[in-house]
Each structure stands twice: as structure tokens, then as C-alpha cells.
Amino acid sequence: MTMKTPIAEEAPGMITSGENISYWVASVQPLGTAPLMQDETTDILVIGGGIAGLSTAYLLAKEGKQVMLVEDGMIASGESGRTTAHLTAALDDHYQAIDRAFGEAGSKLAAESHTAAISMIEKIVNAEHIACNFERVNGYLFLHAGTKKEYLQQEYQSVLRTGLEARWLNDTPGMPAAAGPCIEYRNQAQFHIIRYLHELCNAILRYGGKIYTKTRATDIDSSGAVCNGYKVSANHIVVATNSPINNMVTMHTKQFPYRTYVIAALIGKNSMPHALWWDTGNEDTRWISAPYHYIRTAPYDQQHDLLILGGEDHKTGQAEDEDVPEELRYSALINWMRIYFPAAGDIVYKWSGQIMEPIDYLAYIGRNPGDKNIYIITGDSGNGVTHGTLGAMIISDLIQNIPNPWTELYDPKRKPTKEFGKYISEILKMAGQYADYITPADIKNIEQLTAGEGAILGKGFKRIAVYKDDQQQVHAFSAVCPHLGCVVQWNADEKSFDCPCHGSRFTKEGELINGPAIAPLTRIDIQDLHR
Image (cartoon, rainbow, N blue to C red):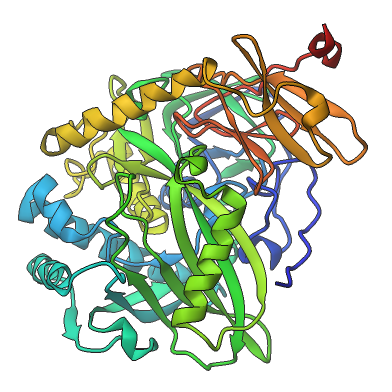
């Protein structure tokens, strides 16, 4: 398996939130601005430089609003740079599940809103003349090997009731006959997300907005936030950080972090139709959402396109619960690809990303519970690009006091009444992670650690995150996540320490790369490990 060499990073987590580099990040130069170096006052402060934050800032700046955006890394250094950029109203939790949770009227609104998000992206691409390979394509939902045809037929009926443009096909285009029947979704789309986001930045600046990268926001309240130690006063604060960093508990009991894996293989130029594919998912799983495979193509060079294939999801920090560590998830993807796409060639990229799975399938978008002027966009549920875009549409309307038909559907205050049993089950599983204080640690002494690897070291009831670099120097930190005290786990694939409770992630040097934590792991003197 040949791999592209990762691009150099300014600092861990500054360009992307993991050791592996996605095709999108590797194919363009990183984009940054000057960091914030003084106190500021603005009407609207947007925190987060991914699809949700940049789209929000763009829509408001274009309307002449005073907008300032801060991002703690470079632009799209979080999860937006690690997506596969499917633009679809074919939601990954399926409409028959959304019917149960929100009724048929809710499903129609969900389909309408995601369709509108795709149209909004297309509108922006055309208005701002963005060269990002935006293309309308069809999508195909086909059967997972273990799923009965009746399930797909039920989903088709649910889809038809939403009003989406769809039809039943007896064979799946672009797939071998073994894939069987599918639902065809017309007029979905795909694009190069980083090129799109970079041009959104340029447009925001043209419309008078301000952008500060390498600027971390903390101490968020109704008056604004502290950014790089400077006070930013604002009338409206939008937290678009994948997982909210302003909300310590409430939202983190309603959604759960998952890791998903992606490979990109060479295929002949135009040898496959430009389309999106998804299987129905593996129902024989311990996770709340059936892990599924998702596929698309993308332009690459004059001789090749890329086949981009993802899946093999698991809860963040809990890969070992299935006895399949993170780094082996790619092998499972390759094996699946060889069955369904035997003509695919060398693997040239691999990466993983983090998604937030809400207990009732749809994102949380709107006013943060208990706040009047703080807004959140979170709970992407595997449809982060469209959820982030429609989140921007909802939030910009809320700030401008414009009625929006989707506000109630995505309201963060909603309670998962139709999924209460699943909600309690997940809360108990989350609470079970605190048992890591008394269960055996990965290693008992640092001599067991090999160069380039990390682990959790046990010292009585203490848990210590340790990493040995290539120069044999050991870096040690408290393994207690500064968010709510879970014990982090070593991710050997992305070389990070990941929290299995709420998804905070830290570099091998202990630096914060993903919230909801807002501080790094506490450093420990290596000499203390020998006492």
C-alpha cells in the first residue's frame, strides 16, 4: 500500500486534527491569517473556521453585518478538512428512523432543509465564482451484505413521503451486480471542500468581515469571549466547533463522538461514473448508529481519479471494544473495496475523522440551552457539510430575526422522547468509561513503551498518558481529560490521546486539538514516574 507523504505541520493540530492528512488538506496550501493580538468589539463573534462557522460568517457578512471569526488552527484544520464532502439529503440514519423520532412532517422538513443546503452551496459557488469541482451527481443507497431487501423497500417508501426526487432501481449503477437493488437519489452533489472554504474566507474579508486564525476562544459568555487572552465583546456569539466548547454538560449527554475511516485509491480517469454510494449499514453492531460504507469519486490528475471510500466507524476511544484497533480499520476498508471495486489501484491517502452522533439523528442548531445570544451548531451525524450549511442558514436568520421553517426541528433544547430507551443506554455506557480508573492500564512502566508510540500508564489509581518520541524522550501527562474527567485512550493511528466519553482529543505532546475540553492535558515531570 503506497501512501502520500504527509505535509509538514507548523505545530501539531494546527493544519489538521490528526497525524494522517486528507486528500483535501494535502492538495492545497494551508490558509491562515494573523492571530488576534488586541481587544476587539464586534456585533457577531463566530468561533470555529470549518464549514459551519465560515458559512455563518459569510451569510451574515454578505448582509452587511459586523462579523469576526476566530479559529484556533488554520482554516478548516478541524473536522471539515477530514470529511469526504458528500452533499446529500440522503441522511445516514435513514428516513424510517427519522419518521419514528419526528414523524413524517419532521422527515419532510429534514429532507427539505438538506436539499436547501445543497442549493445554498451551489448558489455561493456560482455567486463567488469558486473553482471547487462542484458537481451535481446522483446518489445510490444499496444493501449491506447482512441487510434484507425489505429494509431497503421500507426506506424507499419513507423517502418517497419526504418529497425527495428518488426512484427504485433493480441494480446499482457503477457497482457489480452483487450489490443488488438500490434507491437512486437525484441531484445530490460533491465538491472539493477546502477550496470552497478558502474562497469563503476571501469572500468574508471582501464583505468587511474579520478572520483571525491561531486564535483560541475560552471563557465564552453572553458578553463575548476571551481569545488568545484578549477580550472580544460581542452581541451575538456563534459556537461552531464541532462539539460545543461553551457547554460543559447539557449537549454532551445528547450526542456521542465516533471515529470514521477513509481511504483514497487510484482509478482510471473517468473510469467510473461521478456519483455517491452508501450501503445500508451493519445492523449487527454494538453502536447506536449502524456503521456503513460511503463512496465517491474525485478528480486527481491527468491519468487518474480518486475512489474515496469510508466507514468502519466506532465510538471515539473505544475501538478495542470490537478487538479491532484504529490502525487496522483501514485494512477492513481495503478488503471491502477489493470486493465491490476490484479495479481500484494503489491507496494514496488514508485518514480518519470525528463525527458527533445525536441520539435522535438530527443536528442541534440554534440558541444554546439557557442562553439568549449564544448559538451552537453541532451533532453533524455523518452529514456534516449539509448540516453545517443549513446550520448557518438557521443561525443567520435567528440573529436577523427572520422566521425560519427548520428552527424548531433542530432546536438544541429538544428532548429525545421517542428515543428515551436508547438515550438511557448510551448515558450508562458513557458513565461506564469512568471505570478506566480501576481497570488495568496499557502498561505498568515506561520501559514497555516503544519509540513513536503512546500508552496509558497505571500508577495505582493514577492514569498517566505517556508518549516516547523517535529520540527516545518520554512525554508524560495526566490522562484525565480536563473536560469532565474521563481517562483518555491512545489512538495509534492518528497518534493522539482521545477521550472516550465526549470526544476531546489531544496531540501526542498533550496539546488540545478537539473540544469540548478547552485546555491541554496537564504535563507531568518524567522524574515523578520513577518515584
